[in-house]
Picture 1 (cartoon, rainbow, N blue to C red):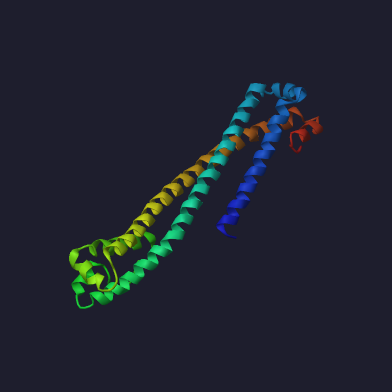
Picture 2 (spheres, one colour):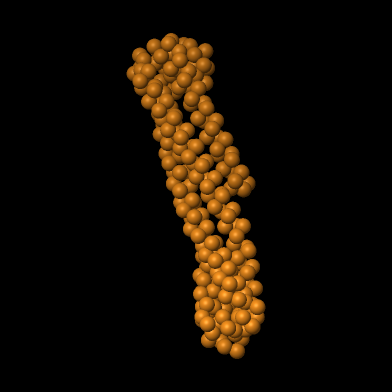
Length: 222
């Protein structure tokens, strides 16, 4: 099962859990008989309203979590769209550089044009920045002009690299925020479920002889 499918199933499970808890809380608050019986065990309307506030907070965190992950998916998509284009330009230019400066091994080292390429995005960004920055010298530009590379062309390719870098920074930021939103959401749900566990246990005691009232709260009598 893919991560995306797992997330969908988890979100569905959370939605079902929140719906069940909401039915229990609203059912208690809207029934004078249930409230009267719960009050005997310390669960006043105010105390039950505390659970309602936890529920509202959990819903807000779920919504925020969805928003943050949407931002992460968008940022990842933007990187995925521009990086292949910039990478393709870079690889073509690299091949030309290796031909243009093949008799100058020192220059190839200066351009970081020898050896295997980094496959990671961060590694590629470093390689590409070294290449394009060092191609900006008058000597290098003069050589590259003979292979159809004007300063403007190299600057355009270099700008694509910087655009990818900017999007990567944005992606990392969105990822961090999304991960934090997951922690915040899970804590809010855990706090709510902890509260509801006690509420449900007391409801079973308070309504032990009224199974129909327990059913109205969505609670099965044990």
